[in-house]
Image 1 (cartoon, rainbow, N blue to C red):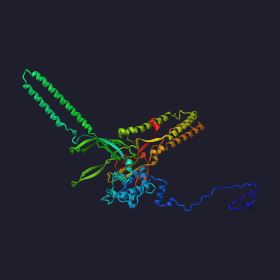
Image 2 (cartoon, one colour; image 1 turned 90 degrees about the horizontal axis):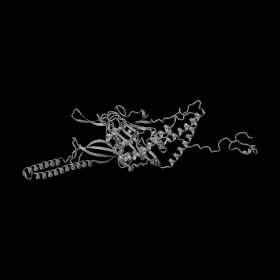
Image 3 (spheres, rainbow, N blue to C red; image 1 turned 120 degrees about the vertical axis):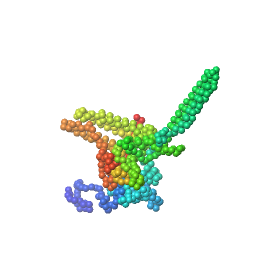
Image 4 (cartoon, rainbow, N blue to C red; image 1 turned 45 degrees about the vertical axis):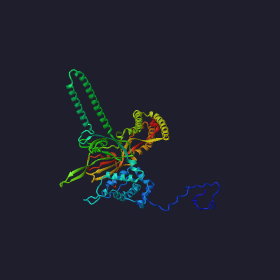
Length: 575
């Protein structure tokens, strides 16, 4: 047997190798990997090339901040607010950038910069500098170019006004009206006139006619009395009977006419209810008054949808008081709720001039993480939501009954674990069959009217012209859509863990208790990102207090809710 190293260029004839000799080969028969010519590390790339690489690989940095360019926290907060979900960014990414030669006005330049922003933001861990975007935004909306006289810098602006300007610009420049598709919803209002400004009932135009009728009745009575005096005693009884019958008939006719006039007036007043259909992109939440304060978002929204307004009547050009009752007739994919915390006050100065100052309402108003819009919907919309709500209720009842039927760990002995494993294996096969059958069955995407909170803009300060705006974003991993997609894998993992625990219990039944039926709680708390310009930090939602109560702390101004969608099979609907 030959011992030694055989190199690749050696001549085997020179070796003393006989028939049936064994040669041991050590190594791999595959060819060696080719050494790359140019090795480039990510650290050596420029910022633009890193963004291009992340864009191709679809890598998103949720925690990318935005640099403050001088009292632009309102602008940064709105940008973070609109990038807390993917739909708007995906729509803008699919649009092509226009060449600079084809940009004819400032609105086209602004829209082009928004497309560029959607393609580059979130592709780097370094803070984003929105210099070109902010410059073009101020050119289109000169209000945001105002300068503070004292500091000689750009003045602080209202975040809600900035949001309105951005939404209007994107909707006008896009052919598909992306803002209407994402945020717009229809409100149906019933407006009824209830009186004038002095509190008197409106549409009382029949007073003169009623007074004329009364005068005519009195005249007829006087005429009958005159007739009675002139009539002789012989024919007095006959005339009396005739006059009585005539008067009775006249009175009956007058009463009938009065009743019919009143009924027709009531009918006309009912017909004066005006039905108005409007499209909005924000729900308004009032803060109430000192006598009737608002403590929850539901109360404030209800006040905005059921209110009394004054407007001029086109016929007599007078102000009348109207009662407005509004209901939601459609639900958008994303719902914005605006808290009206800023109110204008007139202050008389020493030189007898009146100055208008905006004051902030710091009242504490709670808002839910899951917002159910069912109570604010019209009857037509409620009938559509009832299908998904009934299916959801049935699924919750089944899940509740299954948890109640499971025996506790103390009641179950070690002898019953074998039977439980056999039953569990049968149940798993049944569930797999049902799951496979549901996979083949077509599902319908429906909504139950519930929304989940995904972003908040807060304000810290005394009025809208000062203070500081901060955006808060829910991390995408904690969206309900992602949790629903991972629910099957979580259930499979929990079942495998339970099976492993049961096998261990069979082997160590004398030393360890049975742990197969112990309930495991799924944590409901989500993580949020605090986007304070370019300073970003992570917080649990349970630790946040954004409801108000103190002007020197962050108070919610704008809320963004995402619609919860359910995938329902046709068999579940038929049930």
